[in-house]
Length: 84
Image (cartoon, rainbow, N blue to C red; front, side):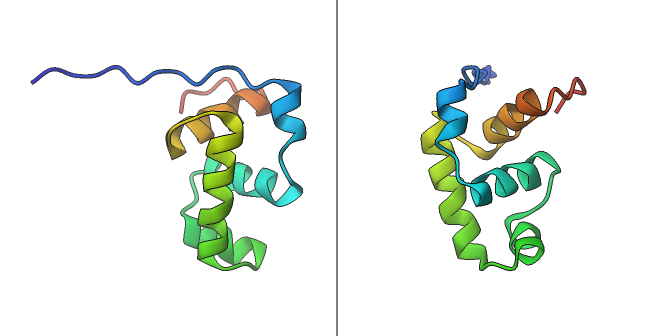
């Protein structure tokens, strides 16, 4: 079985960051912290379905394919040097 290498997301530009809403930034921080959608929803006082909608918008705006890449992008934004 051949292993696939996951592509690293492209660096986030200021223009990409400017497109994010305050709630999307909070969701992104939750993903970076390793929280589940349900936990993020509880912390923000919103429905889990709303978190999922924000995740979809985040992936589109950041031009990434999955939750892991959102977390990597959030890590790059925070300047965190720990490995995901």
